[in-house]
Length: 278
Image (cartoon, rainbow, N blue to C red; front, side, top):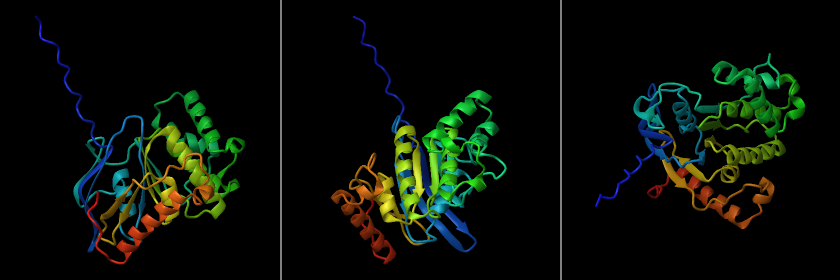
């Protein structure tokens, strides 16, 4: 009797993003100190992680290291198990400042990365750009230039441009900080909808606890510089897909999550000793 065939176990997938004892120093100042994280790879699903913490605690430095804009002083950063040597098409970045190219209209700005990349035929680039422009609510503004758009509209362009290359990872550094409150709330809901639809792994820096709780399913709270992750909070964060931000803020589960994250943030800013991270 022939022995039954044994199928070898599939090799474990490397984390989407991993840092190992990551430290970054600028002269005598240490921005990050031995930060080790691993964001696991779940097929067809990306996590949304919000980063909050005191000013100057290294949040932006961590994003810049993942993006490949900043090299570690010591330790390492890996994406899909490979060391990060520089920027790549697998990582999109949305900055605080409006970053549209002034000489290009909305369509040209959203196509820009695809045109540089050259992987798609021109017609496919146009089709993808137009589909994203519609998804971010700018279908009536395709031929407008940045100076003809509001701040919120310019950030919609930035989001569409970043998603055009279908990045595995989306990095957002306080993307709504310059917007008025109603526009900021609209953008929060838009980003949650796009995240669920397109499924990248998202890292988003925010100085608003309510915003962090609304957007994410996981919140990292950083210590004062040299930055480390003091808390990794996830179980108490309620889902918000399909719920406008103002409506979410009235829900008991949302209020409890904001309270929990705020108390953890206060412990960190007061210099208290956090519990061991889960």
